[in-house]
Length: 329
Image (cartoon, rainbow, N blue to C red; front, side, top):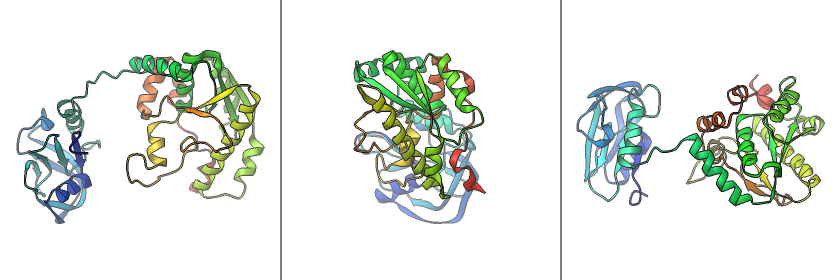
């Protein structure tokens, strides 16, 4: 990987980098957790426009005692000798930060991350919601053609934005299904259907409360409930798909956090929780997948939704706990 693209190791990633390339990582005499003052020891594109001293957030008990050969120190804190470093040899830049630039308490963390993306990775910064919509609709038209798409809608931001994008691409060939699973907010079933109507989406409401109550009966574990709900949705979608002649594709509002929480995508990772819209479909459901938001994070999905004119009440409302709610007591 480090021979092909620039890499930035953060916290354990920095320690692992140092260890792999021949440095020394040991227990720290003083465990750092919380705020620390980072001092820039050497100017570098990664630290452009970063103050000589700034607050960072630490969370580690091991520390890098010696850098590998071919690496150079970029910064320290008052407690540890190596807080930032880079490889001075090799085709692609390789950096390590002992602190967490991605968290709020690292005062100049956003600047550092931007420097890595722009100065080092040479990202163009040309992504805009409007650009994404134009490219995605064109891609969906090419992918779907004249095929019919059925899509399960939840009333949430992800499925609504995905459905709106698909509708822009194929119009009336999108058939939305909104299922009353019996654990919605009061009057939510009727209210959401009305919003979809205003958005111009063709959505069928399905009362399946009893179906889901049977699925959830006797279950208390949150993961079991998620799987029961996910399985129930797939069964209902399959039934509704068979009522529409010629349906070949299933649209879904899968976003990137769904993927990385449910599956090991680009390497070893633990499953945080399963999502019913991740992991493929049963063999009995002969439908391909359409997932226009699969590479986006939630904030990006909301920005796309605003550009599409979706009401803020749907884009920014808090998620409803649903079937997991009782398990917190």
